[in-house]
Image (cartoon, rainbow, N blue to C red; front, side, top):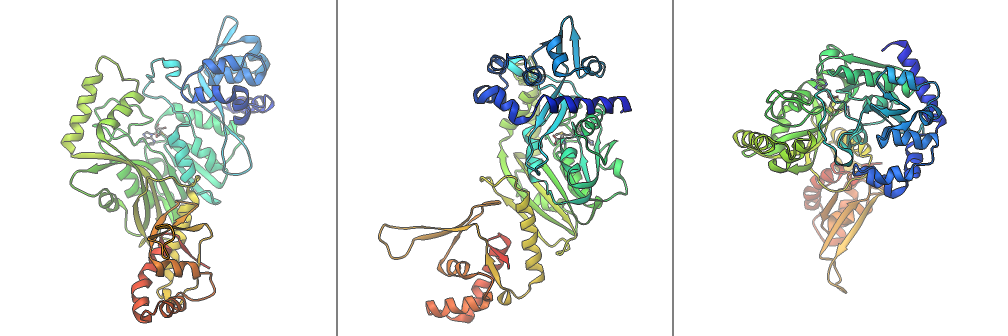
Length: 495
Ligand SMILES: C[S@@+](CC[C@H](N)C(=O)[O-])C[C@H]1O[C@@H](n2cnc3c(N)ncnc32)[C@H](O)[C@@H]1O
């Protein structure tokens, strides 16, 4: 990007700041109804709510509602910038009016207290029921998938980070706030331009934007953190391709490739975090198939959040491409579904893949979990907690001697007949992180209740044995493996 464009991006930053064009201010200007309507791609309530002509309203109309604004209003909101933004293709001028050609919007993050980011991307397609077709090199704005990846990405300070498939650069912007240096890659030149623009727009440094496919632009390099929302849509790879979602590889090969090779680009203890779809084959458990991709020496914490049925999946992505209702819709649907049938695809999994190279366990820690339930967001701390638990188990061969503490957010739920002396069932439920729940018996409940970091687990089990009149050795033999599970699942922690 030329110095001139970088200067333009910085001046745009000054203007959006002085207009108070923040996420909260836009939401307030729109009001809850219009804000919710815009979330459904409807602009009419928003247009009705933003007629006052303030710079904030003008920017909201121009970029979020995609309404042409009078030239004088645009000049007031973006003094001295309208011609230059038009020259760069961000806006377009016609007689007396200015219309957006790209989307510019504030983006609220909960990373830290540095406030909003601003992101330029292609315009949101399909507002007010208009055809949602986009070009093959469309650069997606902040999508629900972008937010999911941002929430699962570890935010501890790191030396180096890689955003593979950067698009408008949203992950790179997050990463730049806690990484010494960031490399952002993409194969779409327009995406690379937007990422560079967005880095300057957010006054960030240390982001190296590179052209190239998958790991080619970082051959021989290692990172402490890789965060990627790759083009993971599972399709027959017919040659037709929307680059933001189709890798050009058939099936889930793109995700397999990243899982198999990503760890080669990690430093020891580094993490590769991937938002992904994967095939659920008719003849094989999904977890077995995915685990096979994980290289030796790599820990894996994979969470399957959702399973889509193949027909619903095809509909979702044909609609996303604006094909629904098109003349060849049925034909496209049939081709895609026939391919799923031929490949033995029974369902499509969606979820989070977290890989850690080396670390204390040297790759011995693997968990592939089906967890479609509500979790605390951002969920990243739960991944760190997962790794801490695995490290603790790895360095503590004798759990009987360990002094463990019950996690402070664990609550006990009991159920039973009214007035009954003993509950019929006891469930321990975490209030935070993954919010795991576990049905336990009286011994486990008593054990978890007594773990406060003072007594060793063995001492607690012996005391429970004597209280219940059970054999102490037998109780230890039965419950020490259960203690390992309680640690692995995060109910018990090292003190
Ligand atoms: C789903 S978008 C993710 C964009 C952004 N990182 C986010 O989180 O919203 C996937 C991105 O991968 C890029 N991409 C497609 N094929 C690629 C490849 N072979 N190598 C690197 N990036 C690729 C696309 O151009 C697109 O920008």
